[in-house]
Length: 539
Ligand SMILES: C[S@@+](CC[C@H](N)C(=O)[O-])C[C@H]1O[C@@H](n2cnc3c(N)ncnc32)[C@H](O)[C@@H]1O
Image (cartoon, rainbow, N blue to C red; front, side, top):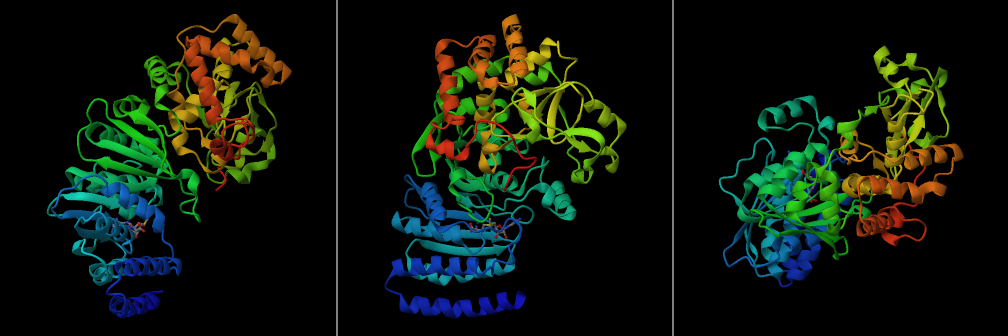
């Protein structure tokens, strides 16, 4: 690999010279060649044996990002642009091309840890100079953007497709260095740390455009980052590319964020775009700041805000009941289908009933007695992975796989029936997917995350006797659909929903959890209403 990279870097300047001589009069041809060179480099795998976090931005996405970054007036002076983790310079190239089109001038700087990629990007300077008048400077640094990079002044513009690497996938040594360097790193992944650092090097009035995993819009580890983005910056646009297969060989769910370095003003909105460009909705930025953990809900329209605000101002599920998690331990499979205990897995849970249980031998695993005892009680069980939130009652007190639970004292417990009503209702299904759908996995599966569940609203009214009886009736009949309309109505009464609010929830249900006649976009992602879920999301 090293020899091949060396050879590639030896040949590159000659290839570039030949190109420049041949197409000196045709910038359009040169731009085309630069993109082709970059494609060839990336496709041939010369960007190392794909290391983690090294996935080049497809040319069409790079062009979109460049266009969103540079739109609007910029005055006459040259602008300083930074690409953090520039790889072979794909985003810088796209920005330069867009700048030429807009008659802007750019001083480009790239930072890259991969020495071969950095040298490759540097070698492109000549062809960029030949391709247009936009270039006023080109500097590629071989450095670690998070640890070693301290630019002398701030940038007018920043662009990046940062590495999408989870903290747990980093070496212990690198994690330690990051910890000592960056405050509050917590469990953040590298993309969140890049965005945080990019905000620091962007000058007031400047603009940033990044492509990041959509988890950044809902995950706990990025809460502080979202707070900062919404409180101190202008989140101008979010582009939802998750359903687009942008990084086709990877199970990736990207969003593009466009951020201006200026304080938000009252009335500023965040435009959420479909990948095709249409605006899906415009959220008031201050409303996003007020959502739980400042999540950015990609699938909820902004007209749901008054209802959300009211529901989220009251008590939350986490205030009323404890939520526990089943056995999500390494080597879990070793203990399956043997032993005398029984275990409930995500796929065994249907709305209002547990459909099957497998044998399990906990002694194969290193599990404490207290861990097991906590689960061997009657409880409401909620799958750890689902398309639509649902729950059932486990009266036998079996063990649990990646399943969440709320202990309840028995069949007659009214809390048990209330939990089943809430967790199987359309209101909860809509709220969970609407608020936390940003972390959807392939096939439209959502992970249950206990902190998310704890944030759902808890009713201040006591459930009516009729609602509690209805839950028992549905459990006995095993046919949840027969009582669904009455159940939804009963739950919505608990929260005092008015008729227009009910209509809104029904509309959101059709949009987020469509049946066979639902909207095509979401229907493709969510082919079934509910039902069995794998223990882990298919990738
Ligand atoms: C997802 S790739 C994007 C490459 C290129 N910007 C593009 O859009 O095609 C991320 C790049 O960041 C680089 N990188 C990873 N960690 C880095 C760090 N700490 N500092 C600078 N570059 C880094 C990787 O080597 C890789 O080239």
